[in-house]
Every structure is written in structure tokens, then in C-alpha cells.
Amino acid sequence: MRYAGLSLSKQGLSNRYFIVAITAVVIAILMYVVTSKLEQEVVNAERKQFEFRLAELRSAVLLQEAVLVAKNQMDQAYRYEGLNPMIWMEPGTSHYLGEMSLESVTGQEGNWVYDPKRKVIAYKGKTEPEWLQFKVVALWSKEKGILTAKGLRLKQIEDKN
Image 1 (spheres, rainbow, N blue to C red):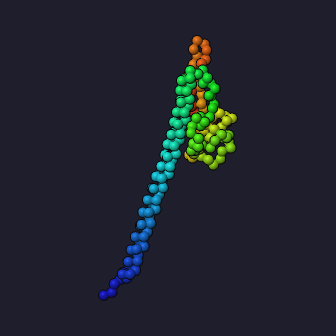
Image 2: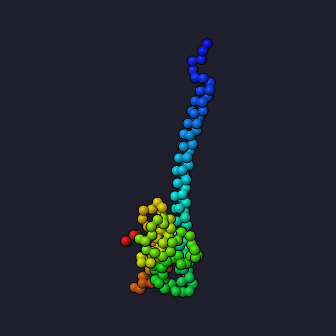
Image 3: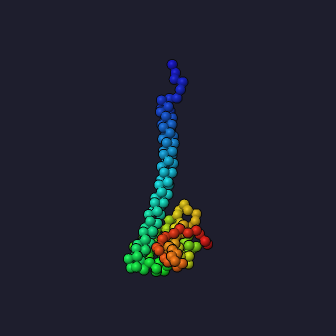
């Protein structure tokens, strides 16, 4: 009696090709899933880094307000409007490029810049199309018809090109 199918060696070889093909497909699917998860985690990490730095900047502004309160000089808060809050941070702060116009910054997404012309500290994320701009502002109050400064805040402002 003769065997009508493939020989045992050819049958084993075709099984190996099948196993290799299935393994390659499984690896490709896993690589796709892992890559998308990794990209998502990179975006999340950038967002957390931005939120952390923004919280640091707001804290630095509040500390300057506390200094004014301690020295009983809150009426001088207007002098802080538009200042670069990075000067109150530790030198060599990461993700800060320095003072320059926003237009001159190219290819540096994920970093902070202070624009002295606009008097804003700005951040452009890797996934953000526009600069997120913040400015140190004095909080004003009108008491008995007189405007007086009551504090300092880091306020997000709209792009005014």
C-alpha cells in the first residue's frame, strides 16, 4: 500500500512553516499592542510632567506673594506682573529653554519658554498644536474707590499673536 499524502519530512517541514507563520502573526499583534500602549504612556508622562511644572510655577508665584505679605508690601504686587516665574525656581530647571520669542522656538516641543516681549511663560507639548501661555498677574480689589493689589497668581491667557 502506498501512502498518498506528503512524505513525513515534507509534512514536518510544512508544519514548521505554519508554526513560524502563526508565531510571527502573534508577535506582530503583540508588538502593535505594546507600541500603542507605550505611545499612550509617553503622552501621559508628558502630561504629568507639564502638570507638575505648572504646579511648581504656581507655588513659586504664591511664595512671592507670601514674601510680599510678610514684608507688608502687598501694594507692590503690580511690579511682579509679567515677570518670569522661572527666576524664582532653582537654576538649571529641566525642560526650560530660557528667554526667547515663541516664534523663534522650533522643534523643541515639551519645553517651557519665557517670551519677554509678551511677558508670558509658555509651554508647547508634543501633542499640542498651540502654545499654552501663562502670565504672572496681580489680583486687584477696589476698596473705597481705590484699586489695590491683593495677591499674585499665574493665570493662563489666550494666544494674542
